[in-house]
Image (cartoon, rainbow, N blue to C red; front, side, top):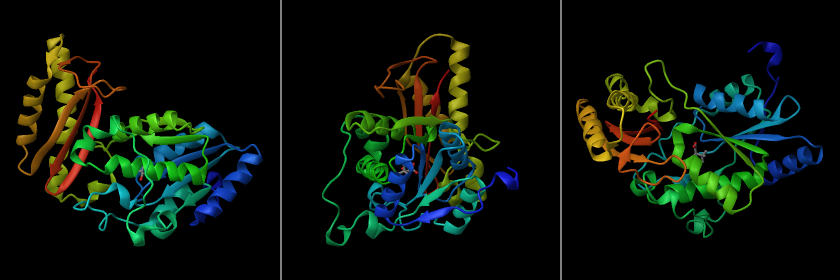
Length: 298
Ligand code: PAF
């Protein structure tokens, strides 16, 4: 991006009320708001979401990125404390990408009652969020939908851009938008990958060099099944494909399969017979780091 296209500054708002005031001013002026919710530690995958948000709202619109590591979506044994928070680096990337405002609230601003226990009001999508990731991480989607609803109430976006890497998250949010009448258009942008196929993720930085090499097994599993299905040319049982994925994952010394699932991409209903139209998702521990990936098998 040329220097001329970069906004000279990116405003940082830390207070939900200030964010709401700014959003009201924009909306009253007829300015469209594009929104990319993140937990920071930004990489090219996030930046592709920012560019998509800009494409959606145009030059006259504004793009807001939230940077907030949301405690309520982490389980007690998960990486909330050590989740990387390189804020200055993130702010620079946002500025270079032409973001207008970073919304970066504190925990006490987002969850004022946390000292006296968890918040007592949650947004809970009850079906799509209870399977797959939700089965492995029981309170995860409750935390995600709660914080996304809160962020929507602060940023008041016309368009929100999410990444396809968290496919199930995008379905849960889509359902929440419909069920709770949020006036937000959901856009899901393609997964951004490293050259060797590994899906970009802030958690990739936890990997040692050897684990980083092994981590490509998620992408390789997806590609392997795509090729296999094409060769076979007819529906094949999910159990058989699961065995194939298990063997691939077991070929890596530090990899452990959490789950692999075959389902309809919209309803997330399990498929017992798999075709190229079926969606596959998998979660794999590489050492101590849990990575996810997904994609259509066509
Ligand atoms: O996908 C993420 O980074 C998070 O789940 C989100 C949507 C920012 C909510 O904390």
